[in-house]
Length: 105
Image (cartoon, rainbow, N blue to C red; front, side, top):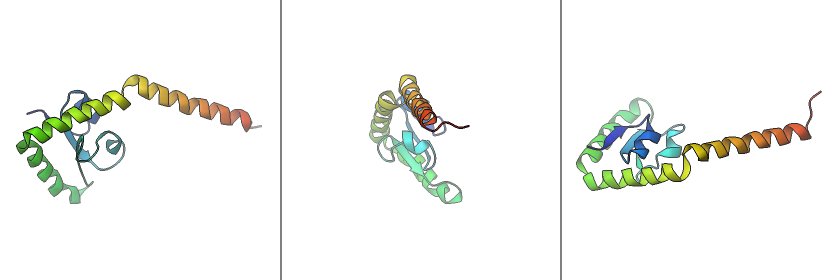
């Protein structure tokens, strides 16, 4: 069954596996709830939704495969090394630009 728990969302999507994770932090950037995977709440309130999501992905093969394909496409379009390097370079350039316009003494 091509299914992996989140925590490795990036790798999961690159393997075309549907994934799930907590609706917090960077997970929500990679996993689009209902499209590339399933999200659940953090903490105790997330336990029941997590269990339901596991059952959904285990029993709905076509949905699981579609989510995996969409996750793969999302990561390839937005989160490969060259995408991240470009974003980091943009941030660093902006920091340098601001530091030049506001020199510290």
